[in-house]
Length: 143
Image (cartoon, rainbow, N blue to C red; front, side, top):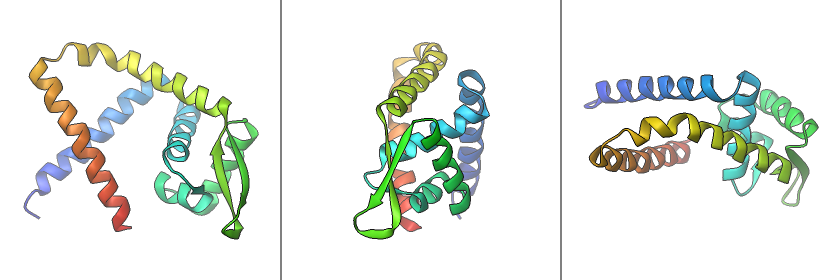
């Protein structure tokens, strides 16, 4: 691979960045709920299987995550009209409010570091976010 070093550095930097945000905003339980709710919030039709795929865990683990989020009142489950064996997961108002609150905490933690960047660096970071979103979408499509 021509860009192997770049990809390696990108994965390592993404991991460090994620851990830095995670340390300052919520504990491990909050982090897993945040990730799962974000997946459900960003997907039009989320099943337990899709949650597992996008979250990066097995279906049994996704079932446990969905059960915990349901018990906490963050999501609801309803029958999938297209597949009687599946349930659709939907974020509740409580779940959405919690997710917004957690994202706000992350923004507050990270805000000063972005505010300290030059206009040129902000433009580069903005472009990088666009590229990362495109790359993530391409990886999901490959699965």
